[in-house]
Picture 1 (tube, rainbow over the protein chains, first blue to last red):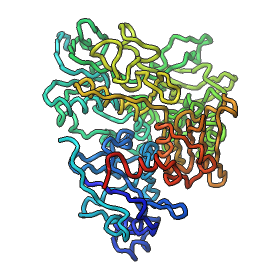
Picture 2 (cartoon, rainbow over the protein chains, first blue to last red; picture 1 turned 120 degrees about the horizontal axis):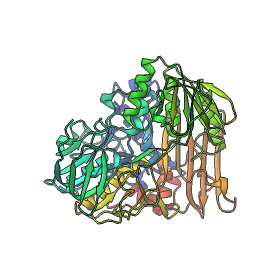
Picture 3 (cartoon, each protein chain N blue to C red; picture 1 turned 30 degrees about the vertical axis):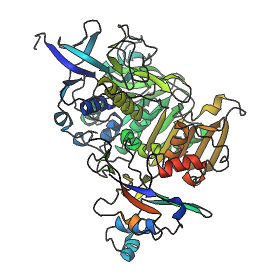
Picture 4 (cartoon, one colour; picture 1 turned 90 degrees about the vertical axis):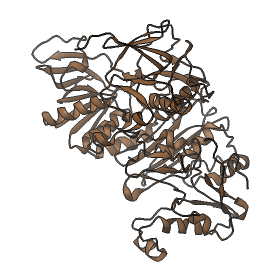
Length: 151
Length: 452
């Protein structure tokens, strides 16, 4: 499967990844419109952490043995066996936040606008390269193809 | 009724069709494509999520949407689901389980994942026309009195509410089930009394402050909360609930009573066997019981509690799924280990998200030298975050109002990470991975086996 690799030493904390993620997951997919239509705020599914000169961007790691999937009481959070992508079915999610409770990366958010439904990275499955990776100016995010563990 | 005694042979037999049982069946099927797998359940509904039954009660989810596995899960995985087959007796010598209809299910490997049953405190019942009360009446047989642990319970309660146009209800128990039921009733416009024996709500995992915030929220939504009291007597008329008398002598009128006073491992199937138990089935790290080829997982077992180092009944969904999966792997010949867990819960009650992890109120009975407490409390924003630290390790967390990134604490507890450098930051809302010790952070950010 594909995974996003984080290279902390190249991250300059510009937060372009967050902006492109927000646009990608907006209705219009257009940067100016997205931020104007964003009522309430569109959530970025990638998160930049920063203290002083240290920064990095982090998003769902799409764990093999994902804690969020086993904690999910509604069956909304599943790992696609073919693509390896962990996705949250917004229709099934009831907003109990068990996934938030167990994600050691802290990369699942409450989508307040829908009143429920955990919001997380979907690895931009319809794009060749996830938008956060594509738009990182310093190659602090890379996409890497990993061999399938078992088949 | 069909009384014919049937002998049925299965490679893998699973008692229980909830989180642990289904997760085990799934991992068995992954390793063993051909073997026969059967799941016995006393219930009449196929897979559904027990934590969601109050969502059904509130009308937020209908019966078609309460399943946590796809409807074709059993068919797709070639698992035989035996509904309304109550396991009544286990014979480990001859390796069979007897069901209520007299069938014998023989197994090569057995998983006991029968879960928990409601704990019902002894309560006297009195007919309003009589002066003597009795302790012998089964609460469940009184019209209008219910426990709430299965979908069938929820369906019956809903029917009762509709049939009798119920406008007032009482809930015994201010724990998670009780409060989620309270939320459901409030949303249905039913007046409620929550009766809690201890001095505060959610006393198992909360402290006074957190409990107070939730109590205020529930009261604000229109509920009456009575703490430090329990039911002395249920008053009935024509076999139906009419009201309650509390231990302080006060009387409450209500036509619906929910007894949500906790759960206990359902021991019906194993209590008369040689399986080693101690208020729950004792299992090893492979989820094996003391009898070969019999495994157990979920709310009926006592498994390893990381925080106390002792066996503990970890009756929570994520533990049941993990344990079931580990049991299933070992049953089908693929070694796996359950490293243990700890208690935790996440719920949203009337719009207030709440997460508790580990020994989240352990400071109440400990010396300040032993447990250090770090708190961020914003009364105006209704945010409360408390981190408990023992020997430089986080052992407990309460997050209320601001729960984002709670799982970072889960990881720190699970991996017993030294946080001595971060104490002033640890409860803050902006606490993140970037503050964590460099090697743990590297392990998280770069990840195992990921190199460029």
